[in-house]
Amino acid sequence: MPDADDVARAFGSTVGETLKAASGLNLPMDALAQVQGEYLKHATDLWNVSLQRMQDSDAADAGKNSHPIGDRRFAAQDWIDNPASAYMAQMYLLNARTLMQLAEQVQGDEKTRQRIRFAVQQWIEAASPSNYLALNPEAQRLALETQGVSITQGLQHLWNDIQQGHVSQTDETVFAVGRNVATTEGSVVFENELIQLIEYKPLTPQVHERPMLIVPPCINKFYILDLQPENSLVRYTVEQGHRVFVVSWRNADESMAQLTWDDYIADGAIRAIEVVREITGATKLNTLGFCIGGTILSTALAVLASRGEKPAASMTLLTTFLDFSDTGVLDLFIDEAMVQMREMTIGPASPKHGGLLKGQELASTFSFLRPNDLVWNYVVGNYLKGVTPPPFDLLYWNSDSTNLPGPMFCWYLRNTYLENNLIEPGKLTVCGEPLDLGLIDAPVYVYASREDHIVPWQGAYRNVKVLNGKKRFVLGASGHIAGVINPPAKKKRSHWIGATAMPADATAWLDKASEHAGSWWTDWADWLKGHAGKLVNAPKTLGNRKYKTIEPAPGRYVKQKA
Picture (cartoon, one colour):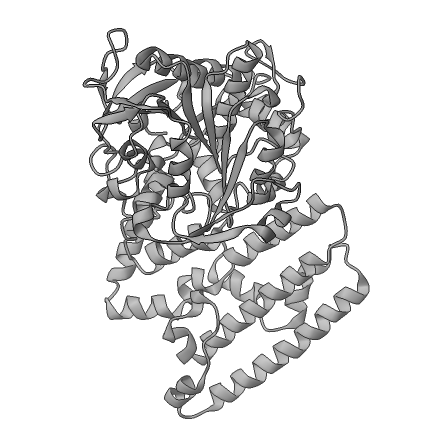
């Protein structure tokens, strides 16, 4: 991390210092001249206004007459009242805008241009003067007011985060899995080296005859779907009268370093489907997959379909890719060289024919997709101000990272993000079967989040063209997680529902869709009820004679740390 002098030099007041970053880029000369001219004008205006403020003998009045800087990083009155700090913040914002304008003008292929924009954005966010004690007047004031206590606490937070290996986004001491998150009552009724299968205790005297199997993402812990009773999708589904089973993926360790995508399909999703059918006696079950869990579930159902088995009465996909032709910002990280490097270090081509992708590496990547919100915001609060972040169950889950076996991860990278092979019928062989997602014969509910930066909603919309059968597409507000975890009782956000006939273009669908206030959960519950079968008496015990209770939910696997 650069020191304060580096930042001050990088964001100095001269035009030359700012535009030097453009010297090695392939830029149209007319565009460069226009950016330089605009920069010169705005920089001169800022200097003149700031010089007038600094010459004003009445600093208090000068502060009162100044305007907000217009960026929440500089919203504190300390930035506005201090003419030097205000000028520095405004010059930083001007430099940031100029660098992004230059990045937008770079000529080249689209992926290269996107990478340049991403790299410039990362550097801009890291170089904000708010991130450095020597340049942050708000943090300096707190240090003086607390007689250095804020700095002492900040150093303690920094040391704790170094020891735990990640920046704290919440007060992690408040939460414990099984105590106040992942608390819906149930039991583990099956386990192998890869999964535990949890059955939840019914909350209604009768349940639908077709059980519900939920396959969460294996890159995170399952309890994002069961945070606390008031925002638990698992509990909500149980309350709707469904007999609910959830896969809990094991946090991979060295004993699992050679596991493949086929193992996750056969010993994960397909084995869970088999066990649910054996326990309940149902020939058909409803299924739900979230994020990569939806990709795994769809692959498993396609493998079973190739074998002549069609166990799904319905399939729900939440923020899931099947067609990886439009993957948004994550595409920046993936090319042939990157995938080959992974294959040679942790994949089947590695010296040990495997390895582990550490969960913290994935977590850091996702955080830097939104660096201001998920990284620098906490650097400033935790370390410069010495403030303990408030408890937030979702951010606690977000910090609970999960390892993945290298061969499995490398197969996924190559055949989805890099080559988009899943949607090509017969191109892949999984578990000994030619894969064709078009063989899945079940009604599908496809949900996407409008501000999702991990699975852009337009990419998720492509699922409706990949799958056959009757489909329903629903778009929710907010992002990848907050859009999904939106309980009806909160009466927050909204969702969009379109006509049954779905155009090829996602934007055309949205143009004709109608917006509805509140959570999409109620719409999904109504849809799911139509595929769940008649009501029968709820079971008095969980599991059966063959699959007995192993331990209470949420089980051991979800508590294993990366």
